[in-house]
Image 1 (tube, rainbow, N blue to C red):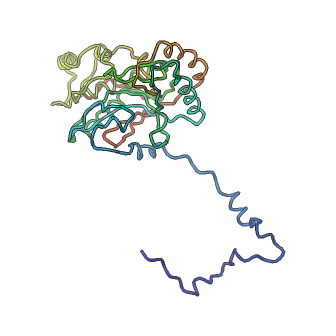
Image 2 (cartoon, helix red, strand yellow; image 1 turned 90 degrees about the vertical axis):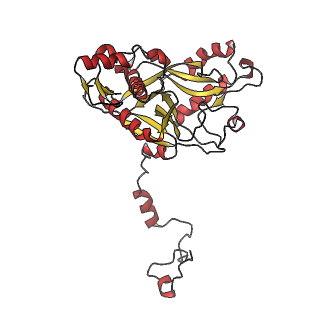
Image 3 (cartoon, rainbow, N blue to C red; image 1 turned 135 degrees about the vertical axis):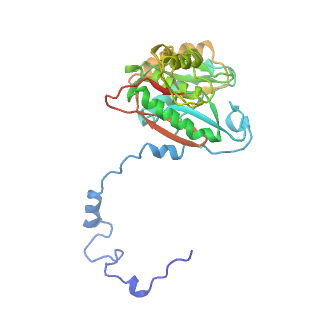
Length: 330
């Protein structure tokens, strides 16, 4: 597009040329008007939380599973056309001070004396381009949805979150440990979480698991599944508490159906990973590092997020005195 060619009359406006130095004045001294403007300009407001969701995906280097592009990592779920990788989680953006403390942990753990030969600990704080990344608490396994299931899954999680009565809460860090993935081919350095007030993490895990169940997807921490869905449905139907029909039905959950095992010891935030199994020396070192580096780190939980493909949806937790009505959509 060509530049606009202003006429001479427009170029010589009423405002004085700031490049002309008036006699008796320091040309490098800022003008009074500029000083006043600087004093009046307010600090920039913080970016809204939804801003991060717009740039949640990483750069796609290849449409094939190539471990050499990802430090030896292999895709957990092979890509199938028409299937969408899905994850439910709690996102955390550490402050600069918290990030510095986590980097210190990684530096101390990434010790050749405590790791197998040629092994190293890769940080999850930054991507390959050096961009800061958020950390997360998983509330689901890696799920796979069909195209026409995407919006229905979001709606199901949203409704179940509201009905769970889960409210915003605070979580503190209590320790460090090494945890293997389901396939046993990668080990994660994780920060263990203390059980929050009102058991918020277990409530949200229940929301995610029951929502996944509605789409024939696996539960996270399958040992949490203390009772199967079908007996619950049968019992609810017998008591006349069933409403709706078909696969998407709403059921009033009795207390014995709604209960699940306490999974508080399983919740964690991954901060690094290694392809090599940590040695006993590496495991023993964690207690010392945790005592010195983790004290006082806390995070506020006010929403959960659903990532389907590269699209992220935030589901807020309702504050106030609203109570759960004991009804989940499954």
